[in-house]
Image 1 (cartoon, rainbow, N blue to C red):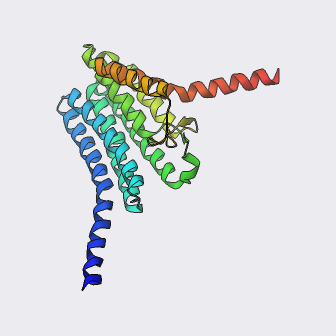
Image 2 (image 1 turned 60 degrees about the horizontal axis):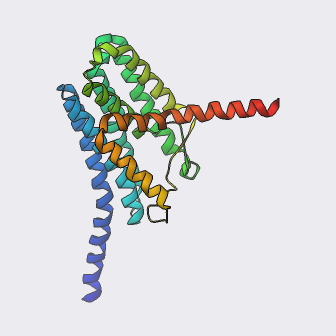
Image 3 (image 1 turned 135 degrees about the vertical axis):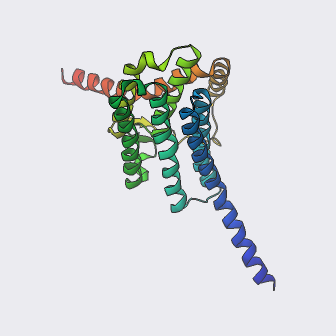
Amino acid sequence: MSEQSDGPRQTRKVRGIYLLPNLFTIASMFAGFYAIIAGLQGRYENAVIAIFISLICDGLDGRVARWTNSQSDLGAQLDSLADMVSFGVAPAILMYSWSLSILGKPGWLVAFIYMVCTALRLARFNSQDQGDEKRYFCGLNTPSAAALVAATIWTFSVNNISGVTVAIPMAVLMFLLGLLKVSSIKYRSFKDFDLRSRVSLVFILVAILVLVLVALDPPQMLFLIIFVYVISGPLSVIWRAIKHKKGKT
């Protein structure tokens, strides 16, 4: 009797552990879907916040899966589908509703290019050996691109800048973000960073300072941090090209 009763309890425990990271993934998808609805209704600040909530949930699901040793193929596929909704479809529709719609057909074509580049980026990521992307991403990752779109809209909105007045720059931004996602430019992934490892006191102080600055002015500080990360890839390519040229002379 004891062995028979222990078996089902163990099975239920395993299923419960596997359910936990997938709940974060579904929460990320829900936030992305809400961002689409809010954007279509003109509630842009709510849509932006929903995308950032989706980013937090997306970051937690993978870490929870690793900490609980509950990774699965189903979870990986579900995560990609959630990323497509939250970081592909939602930012494209949000930017189109806020700004690009004034451009007519070119506006929605640019939004579509951003979205399809997200799909290509995710498909390439899933087909590659994940060990190759332990420390670096090949191309801009989709959450960072979505975060920049959201932070840009948020920053402009709080400064009373209408999306209609910056439609052309926003179209250029969306197009460039799409290209960066499917490029071969290396971006630091920070996957090798372990929260349980020892860090210096200086690192902790810097982290606290960043949190304080973000708390003081969330839209503009988030925009600045994400923008610096996005341009770090192209800048590193330019820096390596300059060093290589100097090495030849």
